[in-house]
Structure formats: C-alpha cells, structure tokens
Image (tube, rainbow, N blue to C red; front, side, top):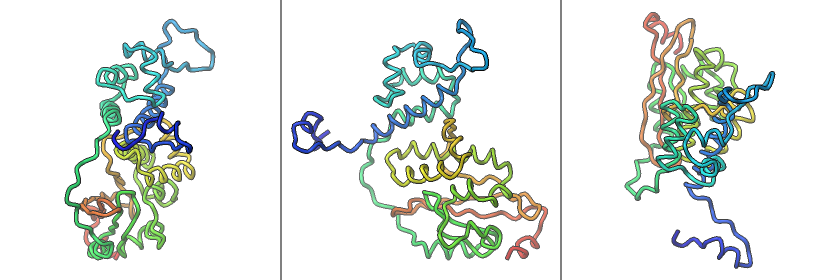
Amino acid sequence: MPGVPNTAEYRRGRVTVAPEPSATTAAARTLGTWLRTLRTATPADPAGAAAVPGRRRRLTQVEVARAAEVTPRAYQAVEQGHRLPGPRLIAGIAHALDMTAVQREYLRRLASPAPPTPASAPAPYIHHDTIRTLVAQFACPAFAYDRLWQVIATNDPMTRLVADLAAPDAPNLLLWFFTSPTARQIVVDWPGAATDLMGQFRHLYALHPQDPALADILTHLVAVSTEASALWDCGVVAGEPAPRLCRMRIDGHIVEIITVYLRSGGPQGPIRVACFLPPADAGAAWTTHLG
C-alpha cells in the first residue's frame, strides 16, 4: 500500500510501530470469529464417529474443509482471520455449514469489504433542534435516533408512554431494549424481536468493521445483558442493517410502528424517526388519552 512501510521496514526502525489494521484485516477477523461460532454450534454427522455419552460432537475444521472441498490449511486460515475467502471457498464454506440465504449473503459481504468510496458532496446536516421540532409535531408517540441507535428526540406522548426511553441522558435504543423492564413488558414477542435486533446489529457491524463506536456499543451491550451476549455468541445474523422495534402492546392494544429514514450528514449519520400508529380499534380517543 503506498505510503505504508512494510513489515521489514518496521523491524529495521528503532521504534516498533504496528500499522493500523485495514478494513480487509478487520473484516477477516470478524468473519473468522463468526465462522468459528457457527462451526462449534453445528453438530457433526454421527456416521463414522465415536459416540460420546452425554456429549454432542461438533464439526472440526478438518471436517468443514473436507465438506467444502478445500484443504484444511485453507479453511483454517479463514477461520483464524488470516485471509478472506474467494468465491469458490465462500461457496464451499456455505455448503459445509449449511448456511441460510441470509447467512450466505452476510458471508459474501464480509468476504468482500467495500473499498473506500470517492469523496462526494456530503448530505446536508440536519440539526438536532430541527429533528426535535419535527418529532414534536406528531400527535402519536414518536421519537428519533441516529445511526448508533442513540435517541436524540422524543415528543410529549412518547415521554408519558415510555419515560425511561425519553430520559435526559439520551439513552441508547439497543441498550434500552435489552436492559429495560419496560421493553420486555410492551414489546410483542420480546425474544423474537431481540433475536432480530441483534442479527441486524451484526449485519451493520459487518458493514463497518472498523467503526470504534459500534465496537464500544457491542462491548457495553454484551457486558450488561446476558441475552444480548448469548445472541451475539450464537452468531445470529439478519438480512437488513436497519433496526426494527416490531410491534408494541400499549393500553391493551397492539400498536404498529412506522419508521422514516432521513439522510443527514455529520457524525450522526442517517436519522430514523419512528412513530406509533393509532390502533385501528382505538379511534381518536387513544391519541387524546396519550396527549
């Protein structure tokens, strides 16, 4: 790479300096960890294997390599994060681990990290005050959050409905979802929604493997939530990076949520504005009650 000394040049210097990992290196490490998680969670074919009472045998690297029709060394290099697989190896690994269509797409995305895009005109910056003004206009509960799921605006009905999500210290939506008792009470099918949400976070993490802010969120999330940690460890992945809150149960009604994406420049990235739709069986009284 132009402008970056090679390893030998670093060794010849008086001070040892490790070059900053590239997007390819970060993607290779993320991919390797994910493949190891999938492999160790996949039971091996018992045919021809010595059964161990009370123990479920897992696939070995050699068995994955054999099923993928590659050498063990080639697969091991991928799982250890030393290299990214090419098209043939991608297809072989996907077959060996019996991946779903979503997992195959995630594998291809990690194996082909996007190159830096040419500089282009930045999206106009939308000031937080503008977002707050917009959210305040909704009659139904509404809130806005940035690309890191940081809540940046809530309206009065939302504050009355979910006070801990409208706290002054700008809570993170992911952390709220996994740590707040309120989330477990009002989110319909919380376990399913949690699986979906963590899978989408993993997808976003693959898109930006070098983003320190995402790494910080992940570190905090798995430290404070055993459910989030377990979902991350089991390698769950979803097909879309945009988070959803699914449906919520409010005042005995099942409420749908619609999300609008606003393109915005600056470190906040795209802004998402989520609004609770009035239940079809509740009428205007529901909105008046919350307001």
